[in-house]
Length: 254
Figure 1 (cartoon, rainbow, N blue to C red):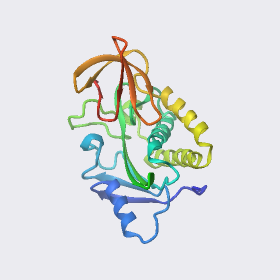
Figure 2 (cartoon, rainbow, N blue to C red):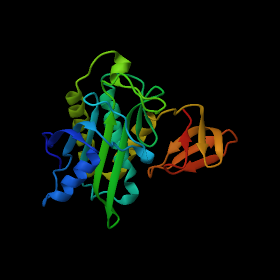
Figure 3 (tube, one colour):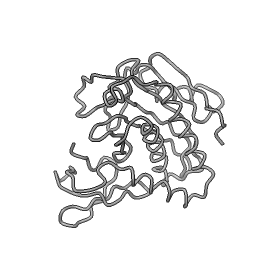
């Protein structure tokens, strides 16, 4: 069980990637790094995002952190629930400061039509279960200007017009994550998963109405039907046909 006090937080000035830093720490130490140990950096020189993208973050302005867990109790086929609880923990903490927060499948965090947070989870599997997961998070807090070609970034500062305490927000996210993770470990799997799936479904980006998507065959209009427990994304197009996708097989058109 995760201890009642927060696990260690390791603060560093700069690294190429907090995920890589934490992975090296896990490899270097003879004993396991304490679960939910968190590495937070003021600056990343090569932060990683989904689809091989980089993550833009001005030094000293945002939250760039990674934490480790060992969900050996979780079969590989259920690994999507880890992504769900991470995204819910971040969404719920942000809702202490702003409204209109949603989760863009599978786990980007959006404010209205703009991206405020990206999540990258790197899992190691062993004997059909998750041996170790390193969860990397980039959350835009106080940055006011974005210069990359990312189409729609935003930050808490841009939304609210004021500075926010990065350490306080990090502590809030990790407290929520510890609660979710302990529940995932200890509660009856079916009932917990049902509850998380329902919370996640209520939180989804563009969960109502028809929107434009792109798959290997091109653009199409569809509405969201559901996300399956294993993470499959199910849409219904304008012709009433269900379309089912795995991660990276379909994109939102923003």
